[in-house]
Length: 164
Image 1 (cartoon, rainbow, N blue to C red):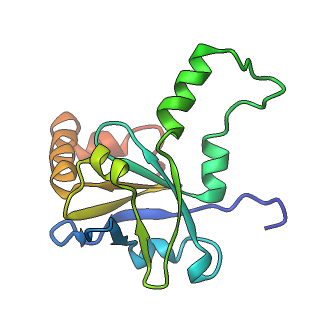
Image 2 (cartoon, rainbow, N blue to C red):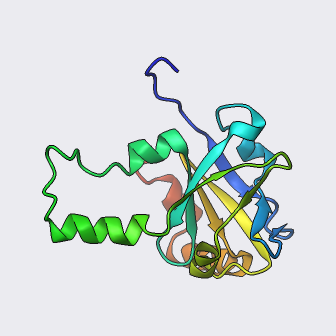
């Protein structure tokens, strides 16, 4: 991309909230085609970096976006003995995993990550513009309902980050 930053537009809940994507015994799940189209490269060269997220969800980043979003401080400026930086890296990176999308459009999510998110038989993919969240469908529904109880749609639309 000649040094230019690629802008992603992962939006929506896929597959439909009422029909989540099955997860097989090996942890393979189909990445929604709407999201695969956003990823750079040929179909069999597309990568996602998957890591634990807050609560019971996973975060999946295109490789270049992961490097921009989570970049440990430059080693020349970083305190290699900093307990704070070490703890952050231990918590966020220990189970992080780069996963290639296979010819069938699937990724294999490691068992430890599936366990973190409580994903057993099916998964939902939720686009957050620059990255994707992967949820257990019931956990997603529960969190969506809690968000609706905390905030009305009108309140959400008037937040600074939403522009008319």
